[in-house]
Structures are given as C-alpha cells and as structure tokens.
Length: 139
Image (cartoon, rainbow, N blue to C red; front, side, top):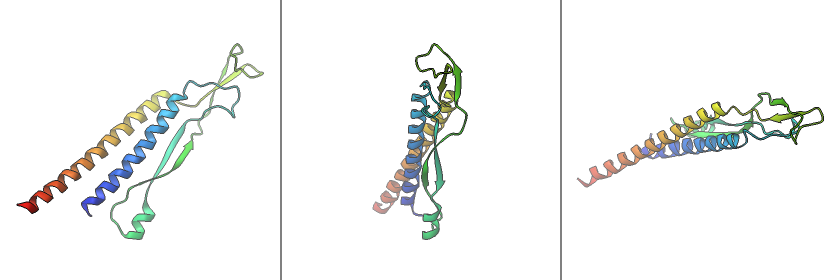
C-alpha cells in the first residue's frame, strides 16, 4: 500500500468523525427543547458509516476509507410529561421532550473527538515518514 493512501483513509475517517461530532452537537443543543405534539418533537440523530467497500473491490485495494451512508433518527421513545401549566401543553396537559440522553451524547462526543485526534496523529506520522524518506534520497 502506498504511503499516500494513508492520507485518504485518515482523511475519510476525520470527515466521518466530524459528521459524528456535528450530529452530537445538534442532539445536545436540542436536548432541552419542548413541543406540544409528538410529530414536532426533536428526535436524536445518529450518523451511519460503512467501509467504502465498492471502491475497494473495484480497484483491488487492500485498504478502504469510511463512507458516510447518512444520518438517521433514533427510534427510542420520546419523553412524555404531564405539565398542564406549561404554555406548550397539549389539550390533555402533556408536553413532549426529545429522546436525547445527554450522558450518552457526551460519551459519544468524547469518543468522536479522540478518534479524530488519533487520525490526525496517523496523518502526521505518515507525513513524517514521507519527509524522512525524502531525506534519505538526499544523503
């Protein structure tokens, strides 16, 4: 495998982790939102990743990057709370809160951040190896 391929793989992984961080930030930003109907309530979102297998098989490559397949809403139940005094309460006195678990989101954010940092270190190590290879040619 070419050392330059490391940059493609690491770059696709950093892009995937960036999407993961953005969806986590969106979930955290909407964690305390309230609505008066189930249909209007924010639902937690998660990115879906896959190895870019089609590309690897067509070029007979040993390594593959990360492909972002999309972002899906989780199917966890929403939080229904009886609060008849709330201005957004429905006719029955209920308000609806998102299915966002703040602890899970913070854990996911830490994991995505560390994965991103790891891929930055991989790209930096590959850069240093290439620089050392070029120095060998000067000798």
